[in-house]
Image 1: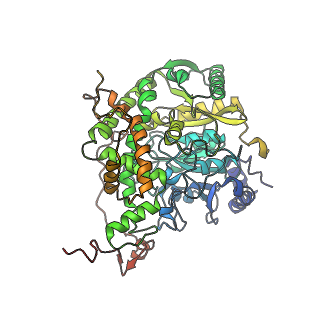
Image 2: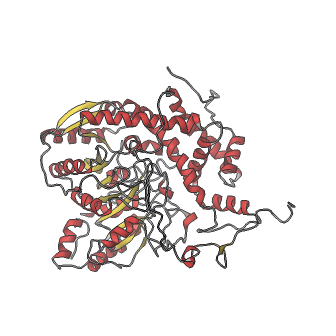
Length: 468
Length: 112
């Protein structure tokens, strides 16, 4: 009997390689777990047949194109869309023999922090089904923490891997921009979107990252990794310099339980030999959100122009081409994509371009410089990932700005193109709290080493209490 | 120095309904009346928040469009097989032969 709640991907691979269990049997075990628990959790939009063998099964966020398998990005405007090609990341998983368990739920076009913006209904947090799993990649995070997948892929534009990983008690990596191909990914904001792994352990995340990362001729923004991915083994942080942004301590809206868990993680790091110091990211904390909510919607308004009812997706019939396009888009997009398309179109329109989009691009330059300066002094930057634990479904759904505030600490490093790792740091109100570690460009190995040492010392149990 | 390049109405209304409808036309969204009303309020609040970027004097700061120092990526122009036409057209809402079928660009009552 396979305990899907506890089995790590690495352990699963061990079972496959020693021929104690096959890929197909593992796949069947996760599908059976989904049959048992996913009616409540709603991590998956659809389950898939096992077609690959030899690897550990995987869950893929529904923004990842999969040949022959419907891919909707959580939107009605892509209902029934069946890609005729694989995204590069799906192809690399398949080449590693990994069968796809299913396509996971997401806020529509990955726009959101709770999965409540999915056109197919919200996912629920396996720790407490009355609460959100975070977003946009809440489906993948809920699948991993609910024992419905050993690991999965998400996409992260401003926190969509890190924040749900924090709220569900998983490890999640947003890789350095350019290390993982975006070919075949439903685009949201192209200068920010990154695909990355979610799993129960740092080693699993590192292993999956090693499978998907590297240059792809189909994505000219990708680069070869400057160094090979190393699976971490160290249990010490001796000599590792970790900077804490001074602004974290003054940030309004951080729950006391999150703060306490963060302080505990910092003390654990110190006990493991890390040198802890203050760093300074004033512009990131003051202007990061404003910068992001101009750049990301501007890019989204351009990327989402392709949904015109001509080549794919449902169409609203109308007498003229223009009416068909306008009515198809109004019927197909939900509220959040419409808000962002409108915001982005406005920010890019004549007369406003310099004041909004142009100004935000200049702020982005300052955020990059500010992070670079901090990372000259320190090897890593640490903050809480989310200011709160998982919040009740419905609590923020009516207030876009309250939802946007979920990502205040994940956004700045995304704008700077830097890698970020979430690891669980403990619990507050019985719910997981996440620690965010930010590394230098291409500094994934340093994140894995530090994350692994901290994970071992913290000893967080990734299985939701009510499912133990 | 702090400069403001964005006109503020002072009342928190950063965008009016007429502008919302203009932007919707640019974005090819046929908004309903109630959507236009709601978006006027919501976009006003969001624009108030993001207008914060105007506080900074950034005349000497270059813009960043992309976080990597990539300039041009060159590749040899080598012919490769394309997707089969039936695959390309497989998801089309309407197809005619090897073409995507769409409504006419002008209605019957409009004479060019």
